[in-house]
Structure formats: C-alpha cells, structure tokens
Image (cartoon, rainbow, N blue to C red; front, side, top):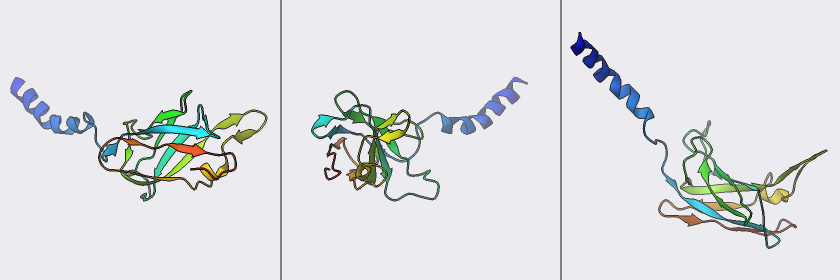
Length: 140
C-alpha cells in the first residue's frame, strides 16, 4: 500500500512543479524619475506597454509603478508582479488622476492617453528611464 502511495506522488510531482518557479518572459530592471516642469511628479502612474503585443498580451506583460515623493519609480509587471519590464520598445504612459466632482488627469494628454513617449528596454542590465515632462506637453 505504501509503495502505491509513493508511486502516486512521483506521478503527481511533475504537475505540481511548474507553479513553484518564476516563469514567463525574461525581464530587465527599469527604474527612473519623472518630473513635471522640473519638479518631482508625486504619486503618478508610470506604465510601459510593449510596442509589439499579441492578441491577449500574455507573452508581453505591461509593467507599471507609482512614483514616490521624489518622482522615482521602479517597474513591476502587472500580471505577476515580477521586477522589471520586457526587453524591447515600449509606449510609455504617465498619468496623475485627481478625483473630485470630476476626474482630471493632471498630466498632459501627450504623456498618457495620446502618449508620444517611448522607451526601449535593453535585454541586459539595469536601466534608468527618466522623463522630464512639461505642462505644455512638449517635454520628454
């Protein structure tokens, strides 16, 4: 009886192991600083979206982070919260939503819903991606 139980565990073990490790595409660490009119942009949402995405974006996870009181951020994937971003070109969106009687984004549309910001994450090493935004929407 004990040998049957042992055999059952051996057969089930390969099914249990894939959930134990970190899987998915290789990521590179990305951090940086965001300013608006040369002042740190506090509590803004920074989102990197791979330029080449599949129909369900499963193999190409978005990465995002909130800025701190110095405007600094460090990306994590939205799907599994791993540190970094997928290597390759990305569209970058930065927004700071203020909720009140109406919902207002304090960051110009050129940096969020109509973003012109891009960044290419290299495959190797840590990357600093800084964004110096301006109220007129012409900064990078």
